[in-house]
Length: 224
Image (cartoon, rainbow, N blue to C red):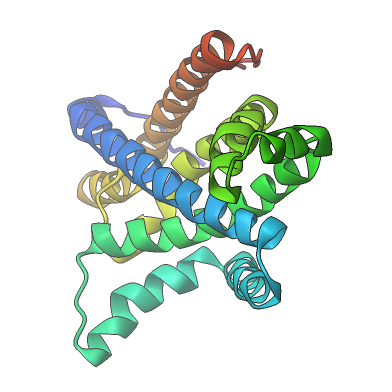
């Protein structure tokens, strides 16, 4: 094989690829943030809800953890137009990733709920706190301390997993790498550069999360 690496044509596209990295991060932040709200609600229902509420939350988690994320995103983007609902590629990807994140975060948070000491919950009840106040002031702070590391790891997974949105035309990092590869025909060089950007992106995000965890929750995390 006489293939020779030539990065000259790719070098001029680095700013364009970095712009795609920003879109990847936006998708990850939106889907993780909204997914965390859904996950907390589902975990709360599974821990404290009635039989029907637990069943609904369990069905949601089961559906979205046992089907590929691409199928869900594909349905939102190509299936909903059949009933008159048109979603832009970014919106379809963000909603699909949010639903997936909500299901997986519900499972992570459910384990955190189980680790809350019964004495802390009973103390909140003695103080006259409602169930919602107990979750807000007792359970959530406990979850943030004990689950900050796995939640941070899941966020990094969301950053990398956002690449699936390229398949419906979202111009995040992978999507833009595909565009540059098609224009320059230097696929190996383009995706090597994209890989380096992904590594830099995840290291930067991990370092930021480690700093937040250390100073806000006294949690120590390895950056690399």
